[in-house]
Amino acid sequence: MVVWRRWIFPILLVLALGAAAAALVKIAFFPDTAPAAAVQPSAQIADPVVMVERGQVANALSLPGTIARDAAYPIRSEIDGTVTAVHVGEGQSVAAGQKLFTIKQAEPVKNVDVLAAEAGDVTELAVVKGQPASIGVELVKLTPARYHVQATVDPVQLYRLQGAPSEGAVTIQGGPAPFTCTGLEVDVADDGTTTVTCAVPGDQVVFAGLQAELAVDLGTVSDVLVVPTTSVKGGAGSGVVWVDAGTGELEERDVALGVSDGAIVEVTTGLEEGEQVRQFVPGLAAADDPVCYDDGMGGEYCEPAGWSW
Image (cartoon, rainbow, N blue to C red; front, side):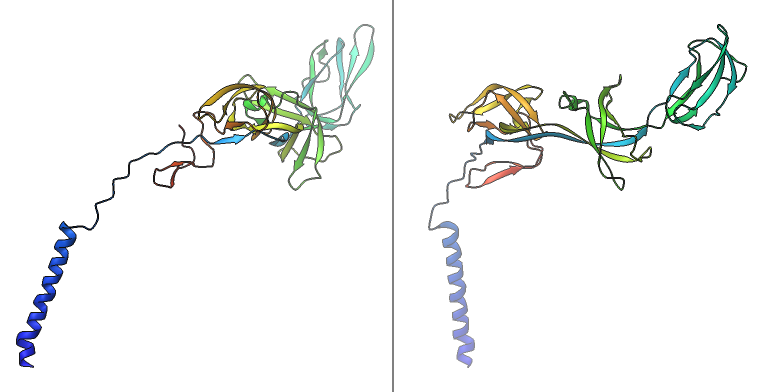
């Protein structure tokens, strides 16, 4: 045991340390292979393209709106005379044909009753008994018992509302079954606010302030050439697309446009079925999808949504 402790164990330890040191020198200064050449960056951005295909486009708008009561309007005297009787009070509900006032006409002398043209509420009573009344003088305002749906839309939707139908479908959450409103109108105020209104049928029970959805069917076309709206610069009847002819270069081309649902648009002239167009107009990136390109090392790198070139 003394021989092993004094001579053999120390000699083995020295040999092991020597072998480890030699291995480190070999790895550090004498590698088996030359280092791989540095990878040169070769990223290239590929323009995503889509094929021109046939499809169906349903141009329908679903607009959030509100039930509102029709505005009050004035009732005016149509004769010269004196008010001899006031039959209603301010805030009173009246029926169609109900007497509101009696005016004694001056020439020829006779009593004339002023009647409510429709059911509603009397507001802003403007005359009293004994007051002179002349032609055109406002006697009272009547708020009719009529309601309408009013929806506010972005002015850009005016392009889609061209040629809008005269009616729409109204849905009230928790209310009656969906019903049709009539007399649909589009109005643009001086400040640019754009509203769509239509009349609620008289037999529908509704209340001012109810939230509603107004669906407007602006037309449907089938078996037509379509492309994504992101592929088109323009959109109101005409636009420009970028066609990939397979040569590596994009051809800018004018197209005529038809019905759009906001996501795809009908192309009436300028493209053929099977052609490929750039998916996004230059400067416009996908709304949701990331933009990906080759990273030069057999993979790809993707930018987050909203990236543009």
